[in-house]
Image (tube, rainbow, N blue to C red; front, side, top):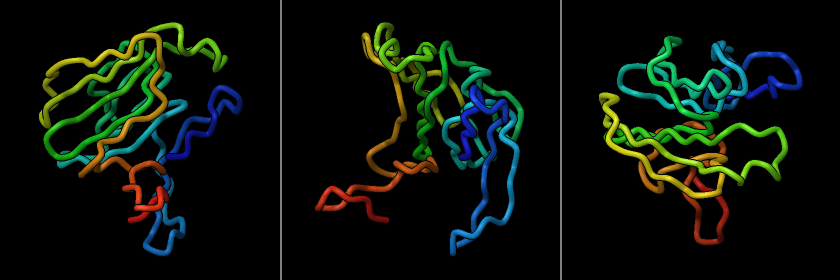
Amino acid sequence: MAHNHSAGTGRKSDVWLLDEGFRLREIVPAGGMCCHNVVIHERGMLVCRSVEQTVALDGVDLLTTEGFGRGLAYDGRHLLVGASLFAEEYADRDHDDGFVDVYSADFTLLGRVVFPRSSIRDIRLLAGDRGLSNHSREAGPNGRDHV
């Protein structure tokens, strides 16, 4: 995900498709601003469109969030969508509650986990996460990421 710091640049986010050698092969518009996370789902590509407060499936808005979307995680059974209220200043981001909405694989809302007075920055499942972000790898024994 190329976030593109939309608030500062005015550019919408993009999804960069890379080959096995990490060479850029294609750029797909994410259709939103300040997007967070991409998930490969059985039905297509999910993108967390943060400013728009939606999750899109193959470019079509599918779910809405009550806050600034900050992450997706998916393991084949559950889709997690993290969000917080938007605040420009980092110091202001922990005044309201952050939350993670939990959906089934068919996008039925199962529940919400609330994190009082904290913001969501990114979310990951500890095992089996199909989310594609810098934090989607498992930590190795020395605390460093490994595939």
